[in-house]
Length: 157
Image (cartoon, rainbow, N blue to C red; front, side, top):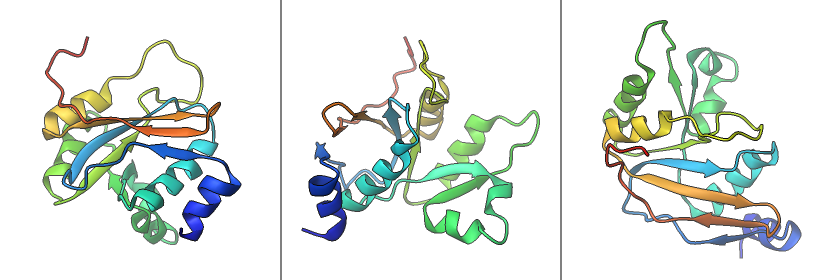
């Protein structure tokens, strides 16, 4: 057992149920619920333990010197948020220009409790023709569950 897995499982008491299919090189990974700042480091542990590159997007200014190299190293992809630009298409283009890209998103768009999710993740997956992989963080049982991928059908209801 590696040090990362030891810390995650033994010291922090978390476990992972399910696994990422290594054959799926492109996907939108939705992580729910996004309710805590702890989500970030839990996600980093999961990424490391499952040996799965999970990417994120950020405004291009985040990727400038002096810290931009670190965000790229961590799997980040810059997006130029131009007023009037279709961000769904811009993100789909990132998928189209890479051989491997698994975009991690929180569909709530905030850490606050919400009644409905934002729909961007769905339309990004549809435009990029990639599956959606739901992942849940259960803080009560300290369980990360990686669910089966599915393709958007066009009927978001």
